[in-house]
Length: 249
Picture 1: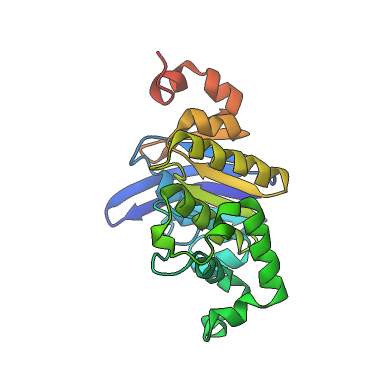
Picture 2 (picture 1 turned 120 degrees about the horizontal axis):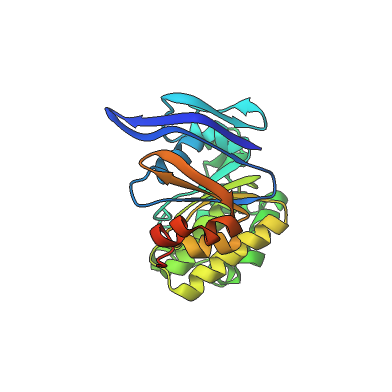
């Protein structure tokens, strides 16, 4: 279980997150909703170890992980799919996935040498076959340069790279940005499939209505503070939510 207890995040003198608390239970999809600049990404990056916490505690399986190095947090079973995808554009699809596999090695030195050598190991092949089973288009384009993929395919690659780490908790930051509605539905439906396979998901999504359709529960953050929480059904029926985030009068 992920527990965030009164966590604050600062950038210099600017406070991006203010004593935020939330929980994510195993096997849940939980969505964090809010306007741009509300603190959603800052909180997600603090969980992943990319931003320091100035206050509070982040517990994963009961153990505090706040302010630990990102690679150590990743090895505990937490994977981040960052906003903007951040794929390695000059490399092939296959090699991007292999880079995602580095977390299974004790040091980056283990990756020195041809990636073909790494790709040939049975464990890596199994992980790649699993990703390809979820995203057949990535298998079709495995030798294609990643930067030449469509936006939807790049998002699939970013998720696939995270899944190569075999996470138990997947953090997704705005996966629908720049994608056509049909691709947004496809990617969000994939999260339901992953949840049904036992993965836990914490999702930031600009399309609040779409996020709540697949999430079990949700939280709302405003100016760094958690101001509302509830089941997806409760939030969808909330008049405040309908006006502020769902575009309904």
